[in-house]
Image 1: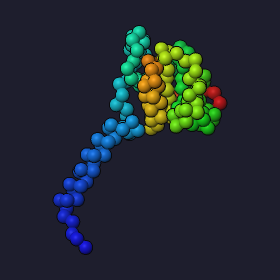
Image 2 (image 1 turned 90 degrees about the vertical axis):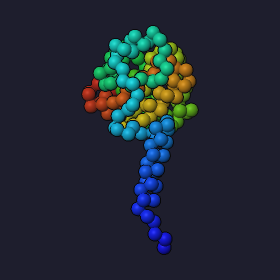
Image 3 (image 1 turned 60 degrees about the horizontal axis):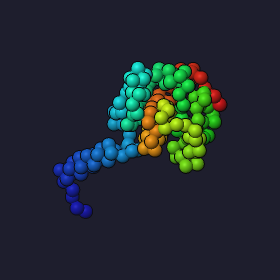
Image 4 (image 1 turned 90 degrees about the horizontal axis):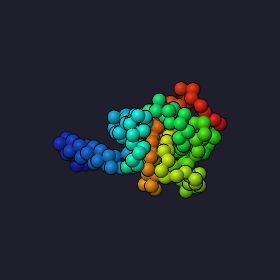
Length: 163
């Protein structure tokens, strides 16, 4: 059996870490490296100003901001699987599961591409809302927001839900 030097092992490990990090950074399904999203976090006051000009990419909003949007009757889209949606969802939300987008895209009918939309999924560890938000933005929806706390934060706060 051939001996492998420690130097070669270290070089291979470092190269693997570098390539993996680069791939993760550019991948749409990449995971946050530090436990938080790198997307720009905006406040409801900032979005009110930005709503006059279409957003170029989805913006992340907090639980407090999501509640303000909900109270203003902004459309919420649940990116989770239909089975999870049926167990419970944010009141008045519509379901467009990311992984079954083509099957559920009819649920977007009647929503103007100029209206604000809030996407959400399970919670901070789930990236379905990010992926759905990016998809909607690429389809021409101009004001897409991502509720980072998702279903868990909303239901834990005892905000309006439906089943």
